[in-house]
Amino acid sequence: MAKKFIRTERFSDLTADEKKELFTHRVLDIAEVKHTVIEPLAAEFRKNSLRAFEDAVKKYDKFLPSTFILKEDDLKVAYERTLAHDSNTIEAFRKAAANITEFHEKQIQNGFETQIAGNTLGMRFIPFGSVALYVPGGKALYPSTALMGIIPARLAGVKNILLITPPNPETKRVADIVLACAYIAGATHVLQAGGAQAIFAAAFGIPELGILPVDFIYGPGNIFVASAKAYVAGENLCGIDSFAGPSEVVIIADETANPRFVAHDLMAQAEHDENAQAILITTSPRLAATVEDEIIDALKKRDEDEKRKAITLAAMERNGRILLVDTLNEAIEISNKYAPEHLEIQTAQNEILLAAVKAAGSVFVGDYAPVAAGDYYSGTNHILPTAGAARFSSGVSVFSFYRRITYQKLTHAGLFAGKDAISLMSKAEGLFAEHGYSVLTRFEEDSIVNPQKP
Image (tube, rainbow, N blue to C red; front, side, top):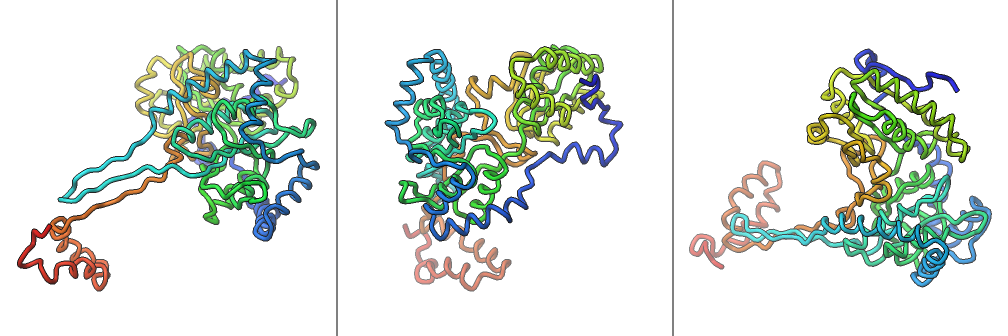
């Protein structure tokens, strides 16, 4: 293993092109997949969704599960089976579910009414009727994502929550621990399928399987899942959260940070896949050097899982990066521009820096706040925007599952008070003939003699 396998650079020394490259996140290039796979598959779904779905499953998975749809009773059986042979793990997920529930309960919305200019205005929060959560099943299992995705939807009041996740190719069924977590969280049913065909099943619907078109699809997935999500959103078939790029962490640390903690937090992000982004921004050259040594030593000692070790090493060599800066203010400016999925702050000025964060999916403050705590247990959500999308979007929450509908109850007096302003504004836009007149016609008979008519 080469000694210097992490790029360490002073930010101020980077050229304009190098800075541009830094802030250009690695994203999934879906153009070719969209043309060669997604659009042809969508055309087949429009003809016959069941046949298109089954043909795609056979083509890409090489097998059909014994049943595609699992219902609540099936999830309960998987839960009880898991509980019987691994109660400690079930208890851990139940504790996490309790924390996630407690945090997300605070986000429940009830709407409001207010009086403005003599009229009653309001907003209602209406939960989606049906949603689909995609939980990956390729390089790892993600039962925790079942908790993160299902609990906020249930708390928002969504009645139909479909979990989509691919079955294990060897057992030809979804792992019990994933189904157990779906049961704990409150899923209504599970589709044992993955890939673009599973996304299309939720978006187009397959009545023969009891799947009606959903309002919203969310959750991370590979390039085929991402491309399918982008397609269904572009066709207005349903809403999506975003399509996920590689996972990311930015760690801001100074000379007070524990280099071992920093090193392992970078490695934990790199463990996701070879394209994961792991960036340390620090004011301390000594910390930078020590962190790199810690990573090298840890990887040398890690022999229990050669596959994960290879992924971590590949990601660190490809995307591990240490940026030296002069001040912590400069560090937070870089982070805000990068807009990471995860941001850790391990400095002597944690609260000051937290207050200065403008763009990040989720922030982890202090020496004892690793991303892994949020991934599993603390209660915040781990389905977060990647690839710089934290500049304009947020992670999954109860808010993700509401339609926000405004309404107004205007009175005769309230509209009369605004009619002249509406006339002037509609004239300025060239729309007085109908827009303006639709207001004035209401006052042609009585506005002069009885302007306060109830």
